[in-house]
Length: 77
Image (cartoon, rainbow, N blue to C red; front, side, top):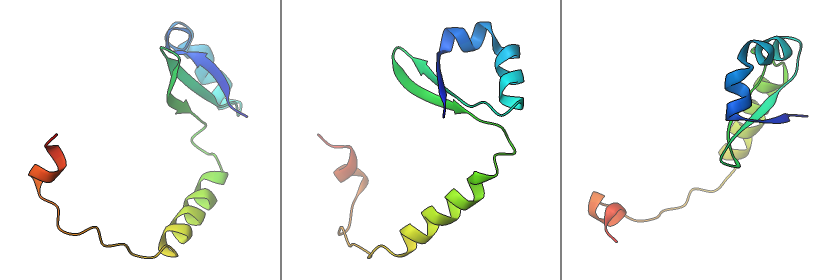
């Protein structure tokens, strides 16, 4: 489970944060109360399986046609 820390805490204790991550901890970093980053060990063994599961899920979804879009359609209010 991810531990939650503020961006200020992450900045001030970055070396300690890295040591904890190296030991297997993971963190969610908050900025102004909103989650902005996740810090996880590089060797997280679950990541490839999670990615494979996501790709299988996406491949199984039906294609949807949204019609032709122009830049004007996307950015006009």
